Image (cartoon, rainbow, N blue to C red; front, side, top):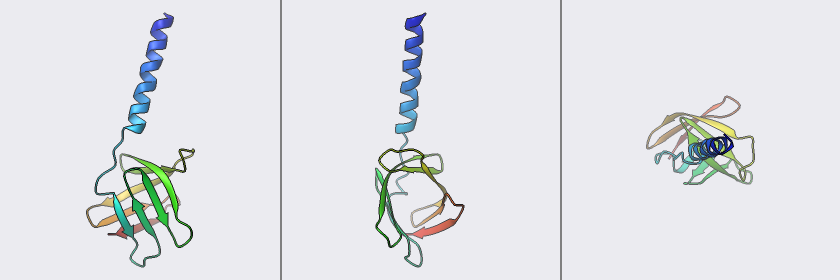
Length: 106
């Protein structure tokens, strides 16, 4: 019974890691975004999410699951969640953690 239990837990751990790490971001999401007034800029690459609000920019790791961007500084928890409300080639609307919706353009 013990080898079966160890195998089951190993499989479960592997599936959880694949689901958490295997999420690919939408190619439309990547790029440099800014608000209409230019007060906030986002730079989204394959691995980093950088927000520049005029103070020193904050660069965090991120992954996308469904319509939500999860960011964390160097993998630390808790994650910061940004909900993607609208995304196309030229427009991005994010719902910030404080429930404020901000529109960005390329």
